[in-house]
Image (cartoon, rainbow, N blue to C red; front, side):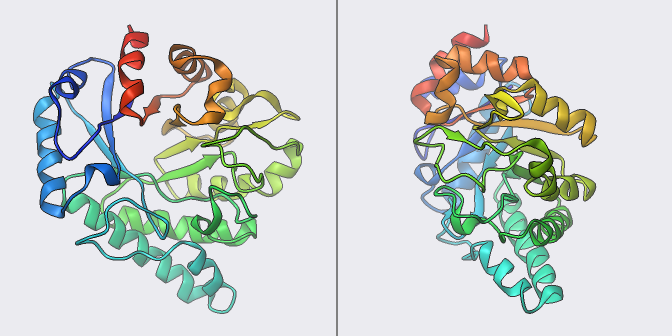
Amino acid sequence: MLVIGISGTQLKSEERDWLTHPGVGGVILFTRNFASREQVSELCAELRAAAPGPLILCVDQEGGPVQRFREGFSALPELSRLGTRFDTDAAGALEAARTHAWLMAAEIRAIGLDLSFAPVVDLKRGNRAIGERAFHLAPGIVANLGAAYVQGMHAAGMAATLKHFPGHGSVLEDTHFDTAIDPRPLEVLEAEDLLPFRTGISAGAEAVMMAHVSYPSVDAEPAGYSRFWIDYLRRTLKFSGVVFSDDIGMAAAESAGGIAARLHAHYDAGCDSVLVCAPALVPDALTAMR
């Protein structure tokens, strides 16, 4: 299954054709697809009408710096504020995490989307892409807040997606633009970055998004291309939900080769669904799916 991006606030004719391809199972929306609540709700209906079968409609509506829809929606604070509050008011922070998640999910569901890719459960250790999107630097605090966030999403009727497995927060590089290598051994990752994922899975998270980060002490391939990491997710963490790739248009995904090679590498490793967020890459992805 592919989750693809489209270019604007209305469907183009070629994009309607994309939606009829049997390999397309979803669409992810961005700020470029948003003009108003009414418009994006109409776009969701248009997308579903154009697809011959069920379609998952997705967005990144995390709050703070990553909130694709703003006008007409609640201004959601960045997750790091919840972590700051946890330091002095743990109970209040956990309740605020549940409320944040419920409000985010309820507003997104109300306009016709199915899924916001949340929560981020990476550690807040200075990564250029993650930054204030992360709850906290302490694994235990991230785990507790992440589980509360999953509960809040569930209360609004939305599935939760933990990202970016097995942990993107402890490297500096932004994988949109650079390759990222985390040299730590598995036992350190298990004690630190993997703790929030274990807790989130126990809380019932239905999906996990992979990181485009390499952990060479564990496996040479970036996590989304790694049979080891997806097998670890399935067998060791007993995760039975959906495994999403991160966007294959990101620079760190280029190590596998062209678009077809990136798709095959993800699927061969065990990913269930691959994100192709840039519309310019969709035709090549559809050709590769044949």
